[in-house]
Image (cartoon, rainbow, N blue to C red; front, side, top):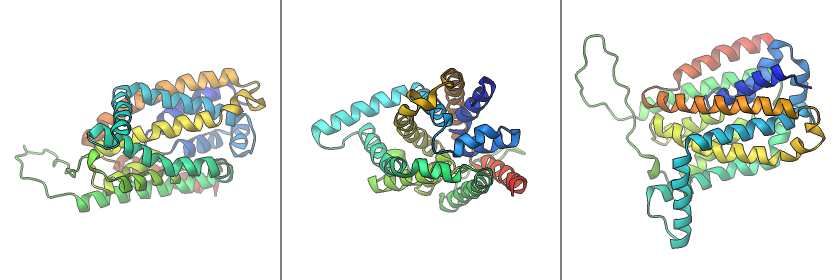
Length: 298
């Protein structure tokens, strides 16, 4: 089973790493293995276990935190979708964003229903998670390199002595994405079913590759994660209500409360971070931790 202390630690880990581009699933495999929580590690890789029920609470709490943070955006998006359906055309930026999110949700949603359970049980092993976490760092670095190569040249600006050069960003707006581009960005979420690959990270890299700046790429990634994470929680609800949840529902509540609070603070921090900063520090972290854990578990 899982203790209250373990539930709180994993809940905190989930709330932070689900939104930071460093893979929540990878960390939830690696940290218990490093701490010697062997029953938790075994539960993650089992076809049926208490950990399935535990995931329900963490996913729902994370999704609710995202909804709470972006509630104004979601009100506009839902209103835009309703208006667009009634008029049978897309006229406003909110209507277009709504349809972009709908289209982008389809690939990962379909694959998740069919294969999420099998992929989780197959790859929820410490060594596999460490290798994929290293690969996640490579993906983030590659995304930053591609962005620098495709960004327009900066306009001359006057800088004071010792001032850092301004970071150059593409000027493309989020609502200019085509539906096919949204489908491609959404399909990248499928990689996050492999423990160690970050959902927000690969989604942001795909957005940067299509010309978005870091702020809009992050906003789209967080909005896109909300229905996927919430649906994952609801899909596993029978595990929470069934035998898998027996004896751990109190721990699930404790872990979920911590996960929700951590997710809200994380998205608040990251939306500010990506206004002026890049994915590079997270890439370096993934490479260092991934290589170290690969050596540890090889």
